[in-house]
Length: 269
Ligand code: ADP
Ligand code: MG
Image 1 (cartoon, rainbow, N blue to C red):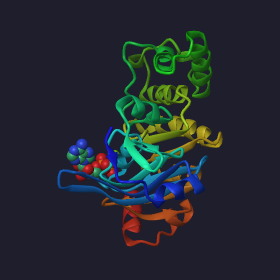
Image 2: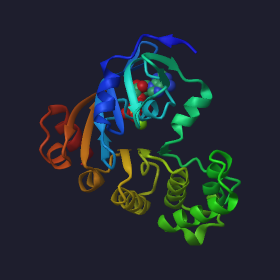
Image 3: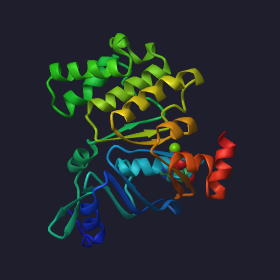
């Protein structure tokens, strides 16, 4: 393990405040392209944060950094009080190995635009797979939990269907159940309804709203401004790798302060 320069005041701050997610001056670049240019953000437990913004503004990259699908190049990220990608011993930070990264990632669920279900497994088997393989739950426990989750997303009757036999909206609801089966502390949604036919969007948003009502901490990248307004506790507008504006959904969506936010919202509406 490589030691990197000592932790800074950031760590101490975080331990005192303890939001579930804390981003401090997070930077990410691909080659010479700077994609995240200093993201500062704190997300509390139980909060639903919706992120809106034009294509290419860095929304997916930010989620992928939280979930360690990408590595940040500057700043620091914390989830559940742990520095993402690092382990602290005394006042030194060490990079985590792959196994430890996998453990950190386990507390985070992610739902993508494409549902990515295992095509050769039924809905029920898709939901059971992770808990049995990764969490080492007993098959009986995983099955009981999976059935209750399929019930929760309104798909108890589809438990034996294969993904190809389900609509896009149903597949996405299975994908949500599959994420929940891992008992995440945080759920990230990356445009979960963007690949769906319009008539299937509402059923997925309804499930997400239900989850929000149970107090799940959620970060939702979405173009569904109605959802952001009704379900989001806060809305962040991202553009060109920065959070340009963040606040109460009503003020950000109905009375944006920034010109760029206003232009984006009127284009999406
Ligand atoms: P958004 O989700 O807001 O549409 P992304 O985070 O997907 O934006 O992308 C932000 C920018 O980073 C885009 O210019 C995109 O082309 C670029 N990008 C994303 N992932 C990669 C990658 N793996 N390699 C190179 N460039 C990337
Ligand atoms: Mg994206």
